[in-house]
Length: 213
Image 1 (cartoon, helix red, strand yellow):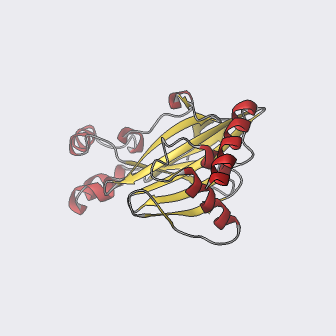
Image 2 (cartoon, helix red, strand yellow):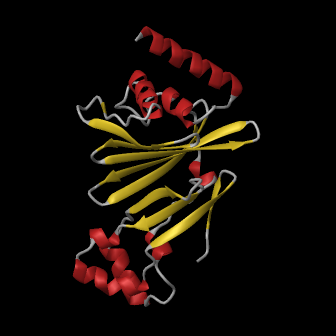
Image 3 (cartoon, helix red, strand yellow):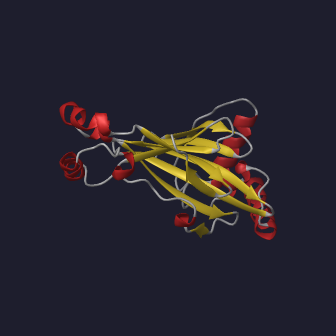
């Protein structure tokens, strides 16, 4: 236990001094508990060790449930934090700076995501600088009649949007709306012909820019 705490402390000091991280596992290990509040740092380090040795081991979290890696490489990780929550992290490096983008998705039961940006010392950065969360309007086509558009905005007053990282290099973010799960099949059928199922965004530095179909 003391060895683990020493490693974490040394890692934190090294990252704070350099403003950099060697890989996303460094960031996972030094996150102060704003995102991985149910997983103590020593447990996180054990999870990384097991995964890198070829063992995908579920770790017990502080709520008595299981947390498990779904993916981990040098710049990306996906953690099934609980039955209701998934976390994806993407490390972004530009010159001498490191930024980490975090997508947290909860099942409400319809999946709903939020995106945050942090520096290597886990100080939060204003996400609006680099990404604007899509609204339900962004998924509507221009051909949708005005009265139907108004009906949909009343039927779904708050957007439920799932974000996931995609691509071989995890360099894209795909946004999907949850209307099909939120509405009844009869209601959704009215809007489906005028809806786009997903939107794709591409990294341009730290910024996510929408890819036109």
